[in-house]
Image (cartoon, rainbow, N blue to C red; front, side):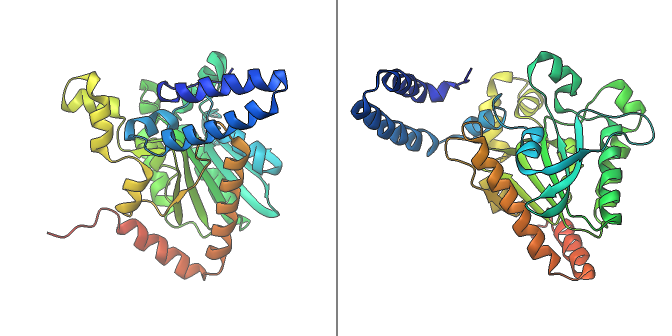
Amino acid sequence: MTTYLDFEQKIAQIQDLIESVQASGNTVAFAKLQKDLEKEVAKTFGSLSDYQKLQLARHPDRPYALDYIRMIMENAYEIHGDRAFRDDPAMLCYIGWIGGQKAMVIGEQKGRGVKNKIKRNFGMPNPEGYRKALRAVRLAEKFDIPVLMLIDTPGAYPGLGAEERGQSEAIARNLFEFASVKVPLISIVIGEGGSGGALAIGVADKLAMMRYSVFAVISPEGCSAILWNDPSKVEAATKALKITPNDLLEHKLVDDVLDEPLIGAHRDKETAAQVVKEYFLQSVKSLRELPESELLEQRYAKLTGVGAYTE
């Protein structure tokens, strides 16, 4: 069943009419409704607020990391475990081929349906998840395989067990280690990039965001609760945080914004997957042209340039 957000209701009505007319075989009415749909999509999605973009980033039908892996990877083989504690289902690691290019893909998986969401811990990795990601990156480095990282998490899991097992150290270790990895690292925010959970697989030569994704140090809900002690100010918090792709691109915190379908990746998953695939392959091609020393120097300069300001 297709899920429509509040601001998509007119689109839902036209879509229902299209299905009815299509069943009746009225081609003239069908063509007219298709044009009406295109106009409504352009009108609705051409003037989205930051909060509406946040809603799209969290859309339940939006493709998750595993969806992209299945659509763009060939001969994919999953890597399990951190070799220290256990396997974390919230963090996926696959080795395989993307468009003829050997690739390691690491992604955070939220899960669909109650049972699967619980299994994936709602996309919130534990320390062992980040350690598994680091193990996969080091394996990729050993065999000179570029890495694609797909960010989609509300944040790192804040549970007692996770803290006891060194959650903050695991995230910090990834930040430190990824900075010196000698293969191309490409990271894409495909949905929700929350706090340290996103940063832990966000240190890369290329950091991009899908058109309807967000990248934030804290959720708007958490921000409104802390600053105003008022959960009803989520929309104001979303706008103040500057978490949408264009804002982050303007402040040079991300490198590129990927043009997923105007109506959203959740309505056209195949096209969205093709966008991710092409960006990865183009990025690998350009990064492979750099000598290893220059690759690392550029990555270092990029990381140390974050947050620079003048008085």
